[in-house]
Length: 136
Image 1 (cartoon, helix red, strand yellow):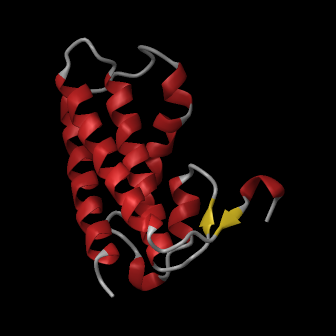
Image 2: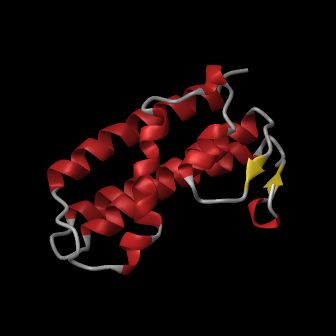
Image 3: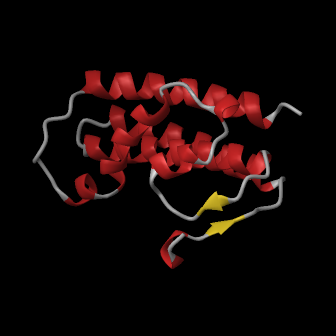
């Protein structure tokens, strides 16, 4: 593993804090999406942030070292087969909102309908995360 891709094993209680932050990021995405003057890219970014934290929270709860990265694919790769979430690596498509698309405006036409699809996936991911965090 390269020096830039370090991992850390966190105390198990941190999983609950991370999950609460993930829920907050999700709620923030909904607020942004409702604002007609806001950049819809930012709502997608907050969804990506929410999913990143949900996956990290599950890793922490299961006491799996967390890669200190923002790439959903890298985080998903750390999950054991029985922990795989809905949509799996398809979620990695949201990585672009945590990087390139945050720094570009008007390059891509995003629609509220696309956000609704992503919002549904994020809702299911939050349920998945909650189930794993609150199980023994």
